Length: 353
Image 1 (tube, one colour):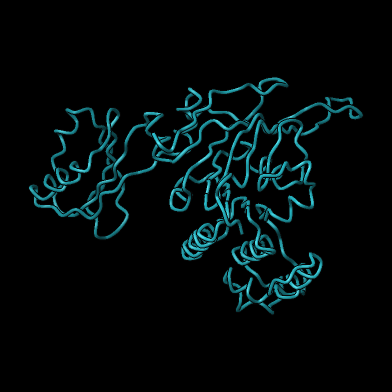
Image 2: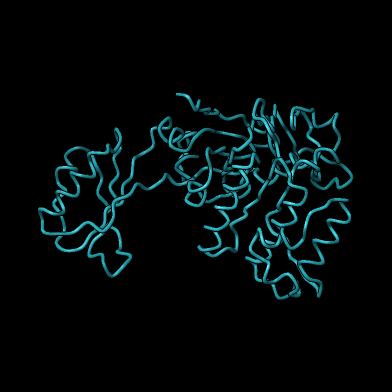
């Protein structure tokens, strides 16, 4: 692991990679297709960055490029201060652990045997059982691969990505197939790795999933990085609607005063037996202040009700994309316009502002 955060562990400058695709009926010719375009990003030791975007937005392509699986068409990136191209693919891959989106583990072999073979091939000194214990698979160390569930397969793939104690960890949709308990354990593991100095990029199309674990987000759409920074700051800069979820039991409260202040009140379906009513409150101008929770509680109690929960609702991915691109959230597309990538306005948020 890195011992110092004096300089970024990973720096991307203008990274562009576009897939070669067949040029119409001329199968012998290739032209540039979709990919990623002019991506700039940096990570320091201990960072957990959520790479967020719709399916097809370029997240996986970017991760494959950083992992050294594809050579960029243009741009450069540095790993631990060294130029990746000069250092060579083997050196880069020794310091970067990559967990692909979905690996299917089949056959009669076992997690222990697979890891031991990989450790031998890498010439490392990792302990297979220690790695399996780290990802919660110790009890299945000697089980056939065919017996592993999807969630267990995800943990197995993570164990292989952690071999050699990489300084930089790239995770592509790692929560797929994990139940809520396993997701919580996984988030805890990521925080432990970050606390030890690892820099982590976690790719996902699920904002609710990411807000619990990442320090900041990098939002991709149509192959371009369109917004980056701490989630709360990105939402603030984009002036997104501020949402609160209010639920309770007993008589419904009188919230007409909020309506006069421009707050939209949407009645929702209740989610538990303790709830008699549930509202989504959308403030289109300004922000919900800490004192507003007390006012809402007072309104509920004055009507004879009891508050069951009050908490903010994060912006949905389509809201972020719509705000940063200026398009209707329901029409934010993933395709290229013709054969060319169309540059978008990029929002960068300074952590100190």
